[in-house]
Amino acid sequence: MKTLSLISLAAIILFSNCTEQKEKAQVKKSKKIIERKKPATPVSYRLVNSKEWIKPHQANTSLLHMACTINRADIAHIQKMDSIIVSNDSTADIAYFMPFPVSVAALNDIDKIIFFSYSTQSFAAYENGEMIYTGATNMGRKNDPTPTGLFFTNWKAEKTTSTFNDEWELKWNFNIANKLGVGWHEYEMPGYPASHSCLRLMEEDAKYLYTWADQWVLNKKDEVEVQGTPVIVFGSYDFNGPKPWKKVLANPHALDITEKDIAAIVSPYLPQVMAAQQKRTAVK
Image 1: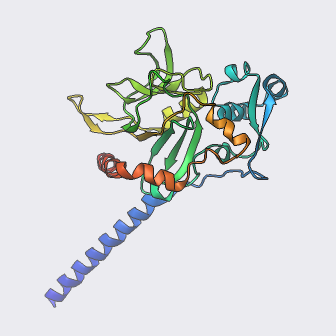
Image 2: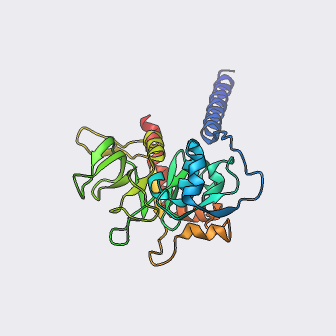
Image 3: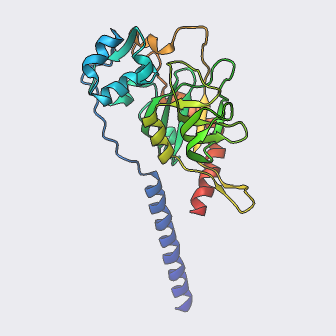
């Protein structure tokens, strides 16, 4: 009877552990529900006179932000342009007018990750496979290209100065390559890769990622104990060609990055990303 009781107790403990692990796995894989308004009609674009279009929409900050995002330029620069690209649907979520997919099954097990696309000058942040945020960027110019590959966010500062020129003030700066001095931050966006290797963002976007991404954790010896949020920079930019986003006028899906593309991009970095994530979870 005693042996039977011990076996029964062991079975109960084993069952409880399995149930607990299963519940934890289910919680980990649960996705945020993102409410997005889809376009009422198929996505399409048109070319408009910049000043004539901006004038009646000056009070509509969300619409102006969408126009800036589509043209990869801040409001100060699109005001100087002769013409800009705008969407024929001004009410749908910006996610449907940017290259990245709104969901990626290959990212389901990754808590947080950010992608920057050099070729489309855009970025997207994901939580467990669901896009949380997307926007435009102006990356490194031809002579100072942004390095590509896998990085992790490390330190951040609401305001700092550039390592290239101490007169350049960088707001909402989040470093991703400490020794190289590369990170994202708010700075003027002329509508093409113009930085000294950093990832320029509009203020609204820089502030969001600044708050959303995680910093690294250092030990008492200032050694990295826990990595920050993974960041993958990929692709290349044709500096001799026209602005890539102009292609959407003829083909609205010309810049699309598919789920399959993202799966292939993340695949070689997946072991490193998951190892860093497991360590962060263990420390928490």
